[in-house]
Image (cartoon, rainbow, N blue to C red; front, side, top):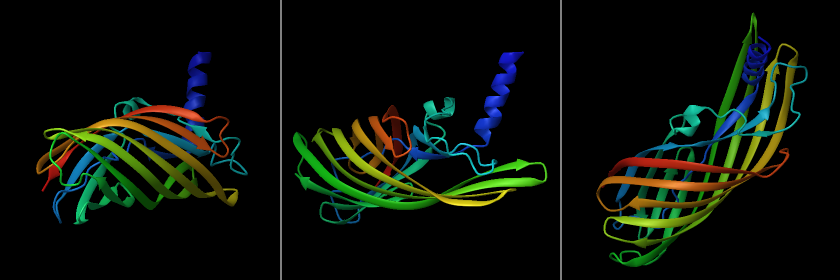
Length: 247
């Protein structure tokens, strides 16, 4: 009975927290489109990194005792079904793609062996930036508590691979900075803005297809996660898959 009560209390407390999900894989591939206006669009299933910036949005004032990393991970997070996103690109100039990664818009430039055939090393650099808003509401009878966060993300990355027939095995590195500004309203008043900053570093290995037709990829990433109010630098292992169409 005590165990059941403790579990119920944990669920209730976690339900009052405000957590932001970040995609844990980004497919920083080493190749761009072969021709101008070529491109692709694909759906992505990815693990997530869960950052809890407010521990209890209903208290007076809201509780922010410590920032939590991946505290409430469920089966959906592990099976890559809680974060279904978009991966897309369009080649606007020779060896230069405009990219879309959920809310991140960026550029990718292939500086090594663009246009070369199989059995060649290929490499690219990329950068991306995006802003988004995420919120959490908690009803308590006739009153409501709400937290809303504005998230700014900037990335820079590099990727190296070896071009085979139809596929490119690759390794990549991404440095990502995140800024979060959170406002909370509850029956006790309005609070904030609360500011949080964090760095995610992605060390990845993967395989991607290239050329027209079916586009697919799979990627494993090892993350280093460092936020200002977190107790430690956290690590995370993440998998992602993508499937779509290229023209």
